[in-house]
Amino acid sequence: MERFRTAIRRNVTTLVALVALPLAAAAEGDRVDTLFEKLQGAEGREAARLAGQIRAEWSKSGSAAMDLLLRRGKEAIEAEEFSKAVEHLTALTDHAPEFAEGWAARGLAFYRQGEYMLALADLERALALEPRHFGALRGVGAVMQQLDRPELAWRAYREVLALYPENAQVREAMEPLEPEVLGRAL
Image (cartoon, rainbow, N blue to C red; front, side):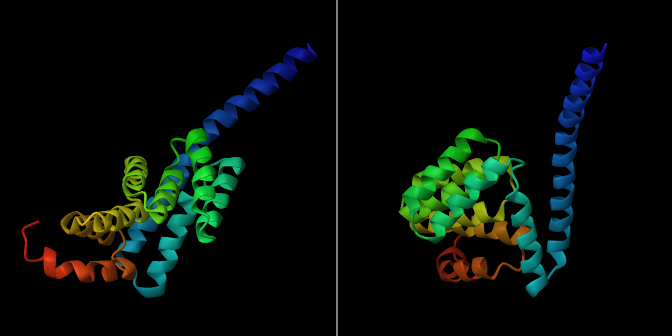
């Protein structure tokens, strides 16, 4: 009888955990939605703070091991050890293929290596998973600039500004494109 009760408790604990995971993901989505709503009307430091909070939410995979791979990958990017970053982030995308931030980070590492087509593929994957990922959109714009596709870069940057209107870095990236793009029909 005691074994039966232990088995039931274990099964109930497992069931509660399985139900809690989607609920936690939904709660995270609700937080991100709320942050995006606030970001639309925010200015200056408040906008930067909200964008940082969105990035922090996107960096939560739900797994300590995957979060560690992301952190190591980002640290390697900061240290300009791009091959090392790609290794960490490839392990992450292999083990957590539905985690958009892993794809976006690896896209950045590829971009920094000058591997623009690989970067673009990863950024597109990140956007398929999280269409509002303004970092991935910014990356697409940067890749398009490197590939001498100013119209496509401009479009990507405009999408970033639709999500994050106060993004000064994107506005700055758009400036050199203005003379070439604004004279053309988009």
